[in-house]
Length: 137
Image 1 (cartoon, helix red, strand yellow):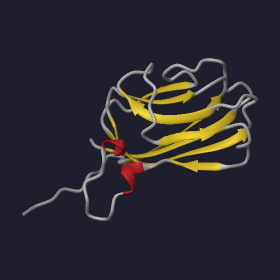
Image 2 (cartoon, helix red, strand yellow; image 1 turned 180 degrees about the vertical axis):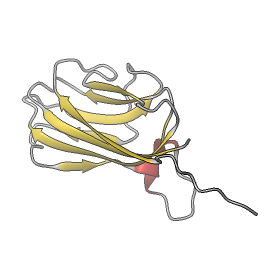
Image 3 (cartoon, helix red, strand yellow; image 1 turned 90 degrees about the horizontal axis):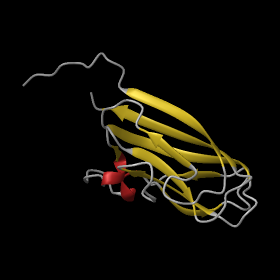
């Protein structure tokens, strides 16, 4: 039996300012490519809303193989018309019990995107998306 300590940085975290708009298809609000180019194990995804959407839009956040595909794997449909000051947490691994295999939502593929989409116009929306992850290489 043997082991080697990894000395390269293994933990990352980024934040993205999200500004609403009129686009609703796929990653119409934001399409964020994997910044590392290697598979990333997602630790946490949180959305902090700073300004309400003027429309009655629901926002979704998820991973997808392209920036044009709607995805709900991280944060399901969440109303944004009265969300200012609130924080929404992503469902990393599907809420599985300790010791069980995590679902695909826990992985951000090397060429995948985190897409943010609105069900209707998200004009007026202001938010910050926080993404924490482990590097796999």
